[in-house]
Image 1: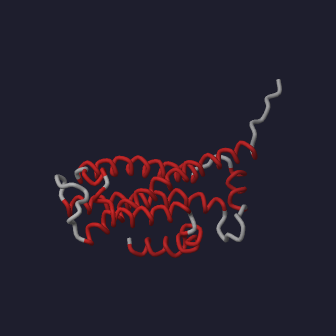
Image 2: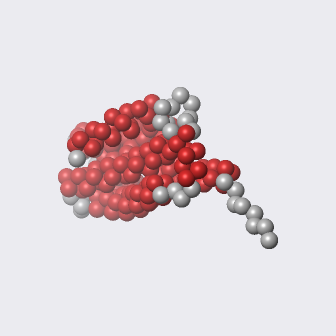
Image 3: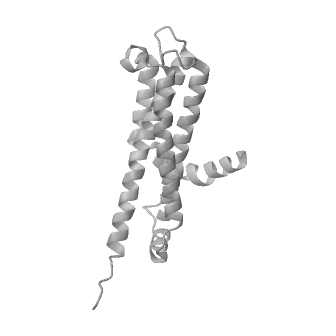
Length: 186
């Protein structure tokens, strides 16, 4: 498993790191994480129980993860060879990867982000317990950083999922433009 993770990081994520880190949702996630760590205990959501928060995150992440896996399966089984060929030949800017590779990456990256959100949520509830509130003013720095990280990652996951849906819509629009339905003669 470690080898597969390293290979994915080396071949898929690292070549795209500038595009990943340059997205506005990354900045938003970092800002929310920092603000949550510093001031989150005063926010109304901090009074939720860990079990409630984890249930919300796990439910959402499971749906998004399933969507991403289904999207990857759809992309891998595109029925039109000409469309797949078009995507494989097309590259955005100075990008080394094809648009087809980028499309697969969007789904896999979004799935990984949601998987990470699930894992961090489970770790948080295991550490805190389900009956305690998410954040209190007297919590230590380590816990504040944990909850800040979870908040930032959750925001990133939400926005990345939206971007994935928009990407799928753009692919559909391209398909319609490049391969309009044939008119029947008769």
